[in-house]
Length: 220
Image 1 (cartoon, rainbow, N blue to C red):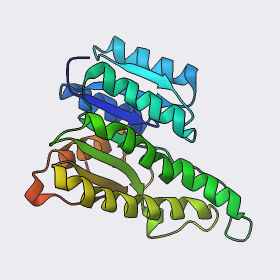
Image 2 (cartoon, rainbow, N blue to C red; image 1 turned 45 degrees about the vertical axis):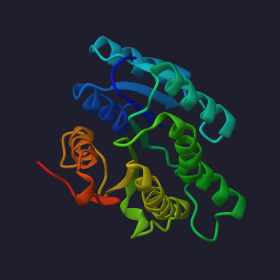
Image 3 (cartoon, rainbow, N blue to C red; image 1 turned 135 degrees about the horizontal axis):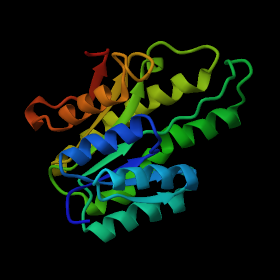
Image 4 (cartoon, rainbow, N blue to C red; image 1 turned 135 degrees about the vertical axis):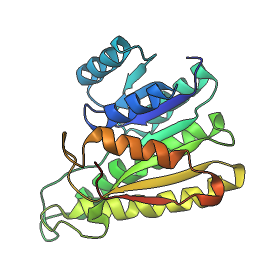
């Protein structure tokens, strides 16, 4: 990989793939991380067939050592990481009286804690101008009672991204969360490609206009 590299953690066929493609069109080489080897290889091969230099590594992102190793491997191979996007979240159908503390903590590990691991592993390969972004959600503000842990994850993720931005900005690296205020669905105002466009545009904002949270409410 000789182009700038974007590491997409939680790369799936929807938004993760759209983000990889959008940044690929801008000259980035996508490096993909997700849990399912077969689905990841299918996505990686598809991106390669579209002319994007793409690498991938199948990792359980709740395994801190595996995730740290995968991110560092991409950084070491390319020499640098220009962008890290964090996409995972855990969906567990359990309301606040059904959810156990252990289940909540497990979901937070996947949907929030893994971002810490990924950023800490990527940081040695990031320099001024690099970016960290994350997929947020409206459940941070309007919790979904039937899936109580999801709102907790998204609220915590936004808080963590804000803290990361404050710390990383001292070295010219910025972080933002994109709060998606709707349901992601192809051929709607919440099409993954439209969301990916918004994320790319936000990530290229100059430091003086930077915001650590951007809200996406749909576009044509």
